[in-house]
Length: 270
Image 1 (cartoon, rainbow, N blue to C red):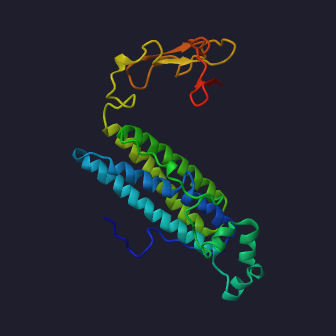
Image 2: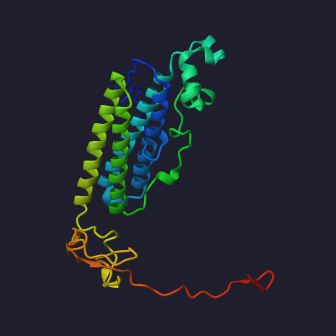
Image 3: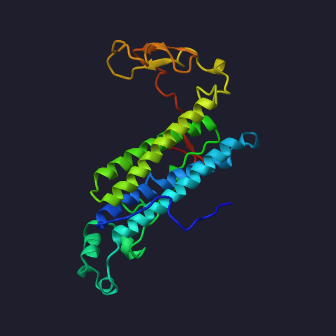
C-alpha cells in the first residue's frame, strides 16, 4: 500500500527555464540510469523477499518509495524548465522563445505529447523499458546490481550538475547526488550483513565446478603474454575460497563438431 503526501521530497526551483536541460533531465527519469529504473528494481526485489527476511523487504520498499519521490522531483524540474509559454504562444509555438528553443534543440514530444511536461522516456525520447530492471530473487546478486545502479545514477547526476548553472537545479542535484551516496553505501552494508554470499549464489556446491579454471585469469590474446602479476592473477581471491592464477592461453576445445541440419518440411539438407 502506498500513500502520497502533496509536497515534494525536496524543494525544486528553476530560475531560468532551459528546454535543453529539461531534455537532459529526462535521462534521470526514464533512462537506463534513471529513477524509474531503481524505483521498480527495488520494488520488484522486495516482492521476492521471503517472509523470514521482512526487514530486508521493508528496507527495499522504503528505498523504492523514496525513488518514486525522486521521479516526482525530476518531473517537476522538467515542467519548470519548460514553463513560460502563454496561451497565445502555445497556439503559435515558434513565436515563444522557450517553445522555439524546445522545438529546435529540446525534446519536441514534451510539447507535442505531454503539453510541456515530463514523460516516462529517456533524453532521446525512447520509452522506459522494464528490461533495465534487475530482480533476480537472489539477495546478494540484487544488492550488487543495486550498487551498480546507484553508481551509474550518481555518475549521471554529477554530469547533469556540470551541465547547468541554474542555482535551483544545482541544489536539487546536490540532494540527489547525496542520496546516491547513501544508497551505494547502504547496499554495501546490506551485502556485508548477508554474511557468506560469494561467489553468488553461495548455496551452489563449488566442488561441482571445474577446479582447474574457477580462480584462473585467462588471457585471450592471440600471442601468449606473461603473467602481468596483478591482483586478479595472483594472491587470495576476495571470497577467500581460492588462489588466483594466470593462464596464458584458453584451454581450447577443437572445431565445432556439428552435423548438417535436416529441413523436415522438405527433407533436404540446408
